[in-house]
Image (cartoon, rainbow, N blue to C red; front, side, top):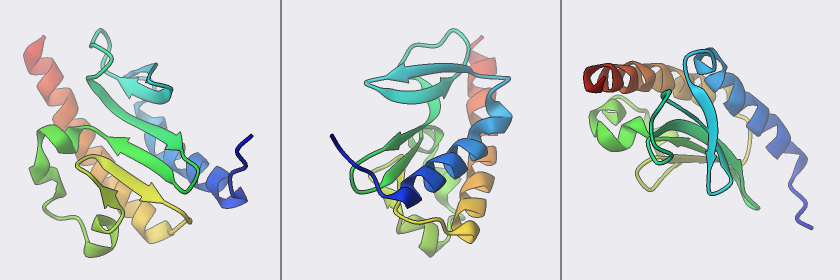
Length: 121
């Protein structure tokens, strides 16, 4: 049994709260055990965002930054330090300022994600 640090529950809750405004417009799903939100009717791999608790961090996967890397142009160096790979932000503690910035990035990313899916419809 894996035991996660108590802070991870708070981080996970905060990350899911960032995604809460999109729940009514997106479908809940999962891919490889990752709880996700995705555009209605899209394939599993075409998800918007998801949250995963790992043994050493809590991961926030934000897929639109993969298809539109310019979304990251205005990201602060502080938030960029949490970016692992192309789409995943890892956190080990709650930093209100960085999580607020991530919420803003998520909002911009949703606009790009929605526009891309509306054009494809």
